[in-house]
Image (cartoon, rainbow, N blue to C red; front, side):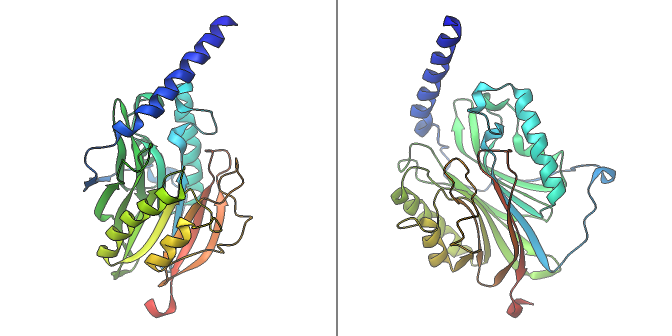
Length: 305
């Protein structure tokens, strides 16, 4: 019993130390052009049949919590458990068959989550053929951040880590462009973003960095991620992003669409340009993370056909 208590105290102390050191772990390359990786994915005979649909894009976002599932912390579990959690996520992705998925808290090789790349692991077990990954924390044996996995070709990627002086836990986003299926002249910027969890003021400053980059790209947008804010929060950054970038949310005042069960809040969002429409929207993936996923089918507005 005494040894167990001592071990727990040691682990707690190590976690506190990690939290204190995270600001110094922010990548030194705050603005970069990440590589677009190609993946073979599942063998054809193992893939779930998908009916081709050029009328819409099926997109999904999920904070995967470093592969820990609903566990307390990824450092407190064996790497076999991490792989099992990612296998369960791969099963969901193959079953729901999004064209593009945005991931947050997704790890490149990191000592606390098995020392393997979680994006590459998922890609080898799913239908996604392309990915782009950004590590906003990249030091001291840790490398993690945001990513996009896609069945469509990705191009013109950018990775941005927000000013690390703003927040004790570095955050950022990755963006890449896809062409609308069957419409090579319609370019869509797809974004996976993770904002600060502590302060709406900090989130607003991070949002300003995001806005300045996305405005210059001048494309239609599907912005997805863990915004760590509800629509009805005072000074909500979700509302701010929507207003500044001309984006819309699905039923923004619907408080039954809970994505973070611990606090019964909706903090994970899919925001789309006014040139796009929500055809469907649902919360999925209970038990895969401390967050639920959000999946939506997006169509072009009538004027874009």
